[in-house]
Image (tube, rainbow, N blue to C red; front, top):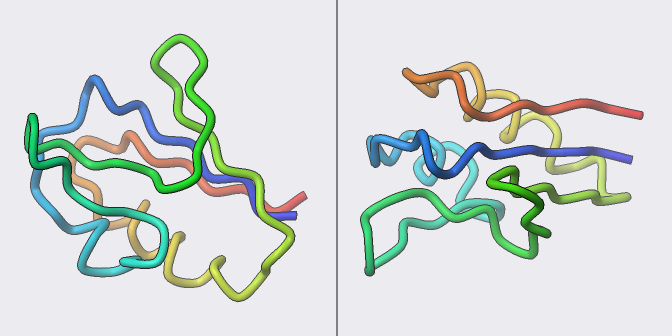
Length: 76
């Protein structure tokens, strides 16, 4: 299981996550912030739990590239 978490309210809209992991992220046309696709929002933390381990590498690259460090990726 791969767990990706995004603190969306702290996003600065740099677009790195979308460039590195377009299957998981896209930019909102409303506010210019990142959106974690198919995620559940709980108190500002958007979380995606996926059994698909093929998303791990790109998601980790997006987390490392994020200048404000608001993306976490875990393998459980």
